[in-house]
Length: 316
Image (cartoon, rainbow, N blue to C red; front, top):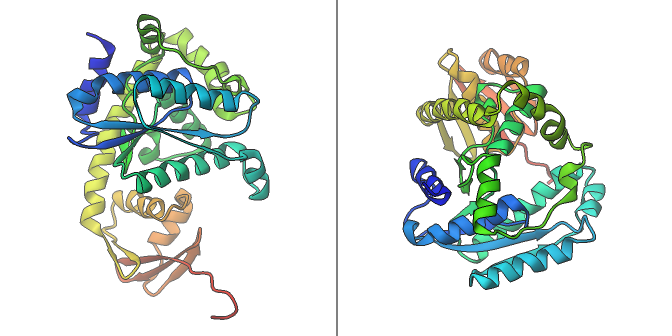
């Protein structure tokens, strides 16, 4: 079966797109994103969707402008709408005291969502594939995560979709060769000062010594965790309501309480607290209060009321 139809099968399995959806593809010009662009361009009739391309120029390399021009030309060849934005990410990171990777991701997704709103797109498509998934699983395991996070990146989360997530490295290389897909090489992908590159180039080759098909093995594991997340989502909907700018969580004194509490933090865009901190929150006495990660938490009997702290100026 052609790889594009493997992707079509994967998209339909996870109900990524509805008929008539306008999908904005995040395309850097690298191999993975150009494969995604080529495949979705071929599949848009089957899926009854329309596509556009967003390119974020990070201004981090001398070739950044050339890469933007390359993606623009490839879109013109296919008559695909093209949107781009150029930002000095390094300067932004320094001014806001954050890492370059974090700053780049924040600015990139802000740009994607800006286009989504202004140009009336419905979904974003990102070109993560199974090796990116493996990296994320390993990274989160090393840094510390729970069952909710160990599944790594998901096929669809809110308005972000990953249509080629099921493809492995061998698939991508084969597709590029057969279809003569042009792309640019990002040298920073080989810089092992970045944690994810260290995992990709130094740790994952050791995995391959044990199992050449480790990407497929991790993908199968992740699919199991995605089913678990779906179950947790159902529990979340049963136990959590949003009212008067507060999330109200009913505590049932079971395993799912902690997972659902972490999900509430994520809904606020805050990093979930540690296992120990979660336990302290759940076992507070009635009328107890805590403040953590910019959130105010109050307990009333078996209910938690969680809201975002509002900073005021001038005593107003």
